[in-house]
Image (cartoon, rainbow, N blue to C red; front, side, top):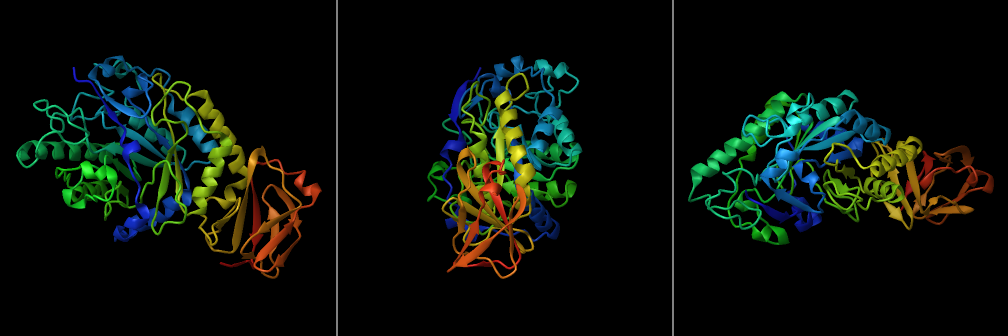
Length: 457
């Protein structure tokens, strides 16, 4: 038995996004460009990290331990429950981990028996044992866009971690140039598995590839700390993979994350929110708790924090991909359901300023964050509260925003039109106590400014 713990790539990743933006290559495929625009309008998505490692309940590490396969039996698996919670929260797309770096496959691959449908896995006897297919079908049925997470490195594969050599780190453990046939076999293995996902699991909208150390050596950026450890050319032939994927799924978004170039259709800053809009499509991927995978009694972020994170990300033009890790029995912690429920209540009132919005100067001032409608005719000003319950002051000042003549200002949570005036480059909104008393939204309230506003730097 091989047993090893590898510190998560998620902790090692250093994001140098702004400095690398000149390397972003917009796709030439018209359908891909259209789908990027469609995806950007969705704004809020669900990430699901799930595998045999959920049985350990460990933080920020991925295991390679074949024995976990023999005890994995998530009998409470019911993806429709997740779909409903995500839909009620206002999420519109999802990404599921079909295979993580440990190499255990959550789909019925024909390339290896290290999978959930193999007879060595207790759950293989369950009628819904092909969980990737079940999850994709359940979310697709409710109108979600579907994303397949797939790890390029595979620590269980003998053609990636050859048992002849001990693994030294997360990289391939042999010299690819010395053993080209072994690397060629691994490339075919990877290609064939992705082909299965692209051809046998219905419509897939996003191919989300992780493990950015598997890359051509020529693409390594030694100014990025975690990339300094990549010493071996691990070219997986992304051109061939992307062409195959799009032959089955025309217009699919390919996210070869951290490998800047034509196969990274959008970037994925991790566990962070950029301070300013980025000049290319992007999403923040972030955990609801402290860990990507399930941890008992995890420290889940409050609904207050999650809603405000969503607003901050959207104000910078990004998408928010929020991760929840199911437990070993196949369900989420009840806290996760409560958080999504609370987010959904807020989105039901304020989602108008979230979906299909665009960033607008000055993006934010003090505790107020801005977006604008797709056509630019409406400005939304999100007033972030320090407490769950929002208490509006008698007047709210939109700094460096000048509302034009004829503008109408109201709160999304209340129908009353508000009086306002301009003072220099600012707009001052009067909030009568009678209106403030009717504000029931928590965490953030949204002002809607229709027509006539002018942006000032």
